[in-house]
Length: 166
Image 1 (cartoon, one colour):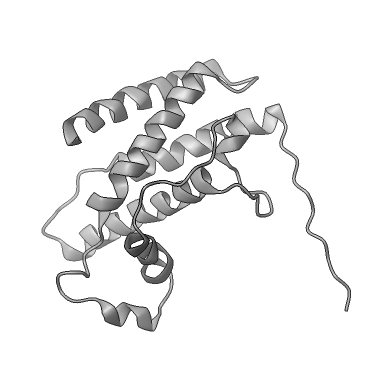
Image 2: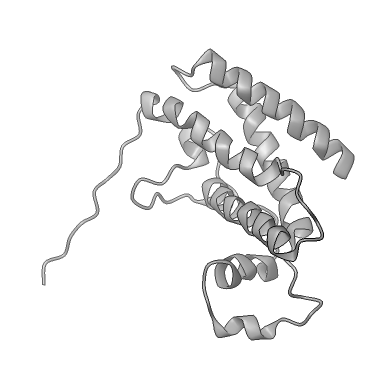
C-alpha cells in the first residue's frame, strides 16, 4: 500500500488579499439576516440553517491552527487562531444535527430542538468584529481599496448591532 502525502498548500500575499471578499461574504451571510416571514416555519428553519452553516465555516476559520488541504485560516491574515466561547453542547449541534442524519437527534425535546442561534452568534460576532478591526488596521498586502471600504462598512454595521445586543 502506497501512502499518499497531502500536498502542502502555500499562501501568498496575492492569495490572502484575493480571499478578503470571500471571508467578508461568510461574515455577512452569518450576521446580516434578510427580513423574512417569521410565521413560516420552513422559511425560518432555512434562514437559521443558512446562518449556522456560515457560523460553522467561521468557527473553523477562527479556531483552526492546522490547515486541511487549502483551508483559509484567520492566521493567514495575521489574526491569531483561538477558541470561540461556544459550549460543547452547542458545538455538538453543529457537528451532529446540522448536516448529518444521526440517532443523536433523538436526544431533543420540543424545548431543545430549536436552533440555539442566540447562544452561538454573540461570541462569534465578537470574534468577527475583532477580525474586521484587525483587517482594517493591518490590511493584507495588495488589498483592494474598494474591498477595504466594504470591510469598513461591515465593521460599522456589525459593531452597531453588537452594542444593541449586549
